[in-house]
Image: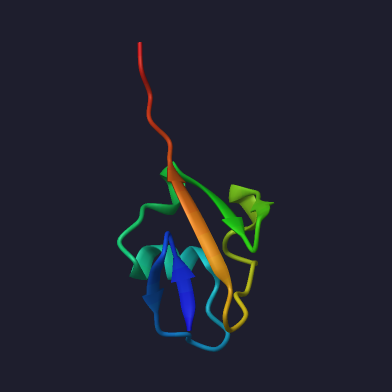
Length: 65
């Protein structure tokens, strides 16, 4: 089980943060993420492997002007 912004998802062993965000309909290029309250750099999303029961928070990046 994984939790993303308080919504529960199935855990897939070996899944990267990048792949999980894509599966959850987030664009990994336009979000900031914390996993278990630790910020993960966007450059590390593909290498960051999620563990069962991880709590992920994704924040959309919004431009303005």
